[in-house]
Amino acid sequence: MGFAGSVVVVTGGASGIGRAAAELFRSEGATVVVADKDGRAADEVARQLGGESVAVRTDVSNSEDVRALMSFVDARFSRLDVLVNNAGFGVAGTVQDLPEEDWDRLMNVNVRSVFLCSKYAIPIMERCGGGAIVNTGSYTAMVAIPNRVAYVTSKGAIASLTRAMALDHAAQNIRVNCVAPGTIETPWFDRSFAESDNPDEVRKALNDRSPLKRMGRPEEIAEAILWLASDRSTFATGSVLTVDGGTSIW
Ligand SMILES: NC(=O)c1ccc[n+]([C@@H]2O[C@H](COP(=O)([O-])OP(=O)(O)OC[C@H]3O[C@@H](n4cnc5c(N)ncnc54)[C@H](O)[C@@H]3O)[C@@H](O)[C@H]2O)c1
Image (cartoon, rainbow, N blue to C red; front, side, top):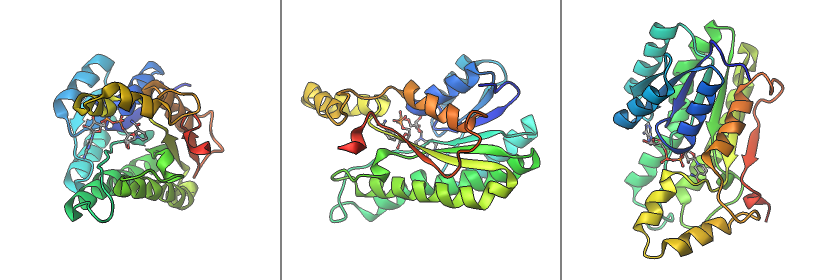
């Protein structure tokens, strides 16, 4: 889709959906900045991507880290075309039993990060004549799932933030969209399989969430992210594109 000469920042780019997006942008000619709190894994991904792609160890919930990331991008490349706000995690719990600190940590990593990364990316994009921001939301922005109160709330917030930013930055030629994945087989779930007494049962329950009776692949979400960032979607802004194997329709 023609990303040659483009610079793309992918947060959480060292694993799962972010990694698949980084690989796809690279295969379309982009230079990718892999921003992840796991510096070693990010280095490895950037090395495999090759070209001028580079890793920057970043905690996206930390303002100093995010400002350093965007300053580095500006100094090194003098441009930023695409920001993929993808880093995030989940934690189990209801309002009744989730510790306050866990709520704050999750909101900081999943939501504040989108605010911070966009805040410091937009001036660079504006100077370059525009750009595209793609946020990784979730189908849980549309339907609740049990025992994940903070996660569900954070993804609803990302959908709203997407629309608010799309409105505020349209005049700067910056499109802002959100991809809402269903259950995707990433290292995130590999960890829960490993921790479970009955991984086969967990896998079946996850597969059964979708009418297609399977989990999605990270590459299937990367395709949607790439499309939303590309010149093939020039009239899309403020949209939440559900790519969930039908999980939210039943
Ligand atoms: N896997 C799914 O089923 C699924 C479904 C819907 C949405 N999502 C969303 O997709 C995104 C990626 O999830 P994934 O499944 O690929 O997870 P993953 O655990 O495989 O990868 C997440 C990456 O984010 C990084 N990260 C976490 N906290 C960070 C921080 N504070 N600063 C910088 N990097 C940080 C991790 O180090 C890791 O490399 C998340 O926002 C998640 O909520 C995932």
